[in-house]
Amino acid sequence: MTKLIYFAWVRERIGKPSEEVELPAEVKTVRDLLGWLKGRGEEYEEALRFPEAIRVAINQEHVKHGTAIAGAREIGLFPPMTGG
Amino acid sequence: MNIEPVIRIQNGDFDSAAEVAAMTAGRYDIGAVVTFTGLCRDECGKLSALELEHYPGMAEAEIGRICREAAERWLLQAITVVHRHGRIEPGENIVLVATASPHRHAAFEAASFVMDFLKSNAPFWKKEHDAQGRAGGWVDAKDSDEAALERWKR
View 1 (cartoon, chains in turn brown, red):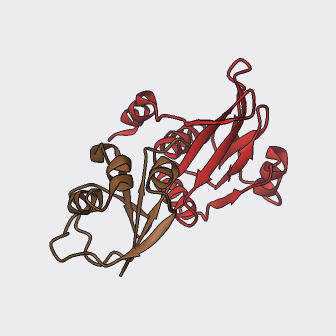
View 2: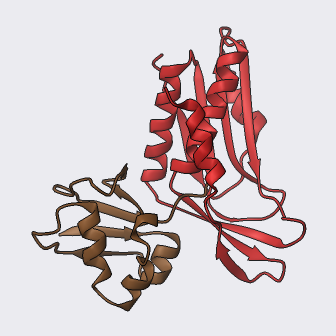
């Protein structure tokens, strides 16, 4: 199982802060994950309509969309950051 | 230089002077301290508060990575970063970055570098509350913040 954790408007649109999922074997990269998630329902479709805008962290470190997700315990999905 | 950054993510306010005092206490080798404090603006009366969300654990880890990178680029003797989360009203503090070095140049540059990367890479998100106190939209990331990182490329 992999823990998915959502923040800001990604969290609001999906409607939950986190969930545990069993990822299918064909979901190999971050890009695959975003595509797979989008197909899980209207709320996911709404949150991930522009997948290239979504930032992703694996095990609490930023990664690019081409990064492999093998070995990920926790994957964070969120909009571009606006701290400071 | 091998320094251990002081990083705190907290709901409550901070006291910049107290943070600097703690950083320099009992030391006679520091020649320059630069502090940057980010405050909440009221956007000409349109904003009553910001609500800051963060990714617990990753926020500390990412700021730690940024501080260690700064310590590799400049001769630093200490770095403190304090970032608040939760509801913050106009006039209140949001973030503190303090850097200490033997000389001013390194302290100024490192503080600027840490803030630039913190803005675009530390996992925090701001939501605006309007003058009537209603929760509005999430603040959009600015291209100018992303562009600010360009000058640190090497």
